[in-house]
Image (spheres, helix red, strand yellow):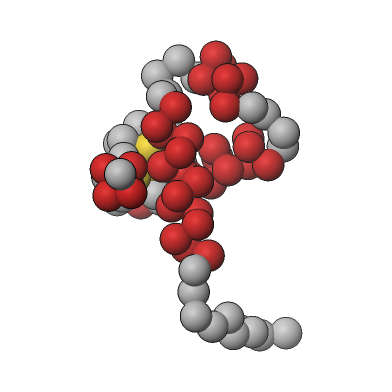
Length: 78
């Protein structure tokens, strides 16, 4: 199931400046994460953005989880 969810995340230089988006739509992953972190429920997001599906929200969460699974974090500059 992980692979099918991650296939919903697309990266296209012509859409949202190449940021990871949902199914080629103009919904960047970061936007949906901001909605979720602001306290919006899945149901509220789906009601406000009718072209999104529950699986899209799950794919965003899985994508963010995978990004956070790095082995090391380095300080770049002060």
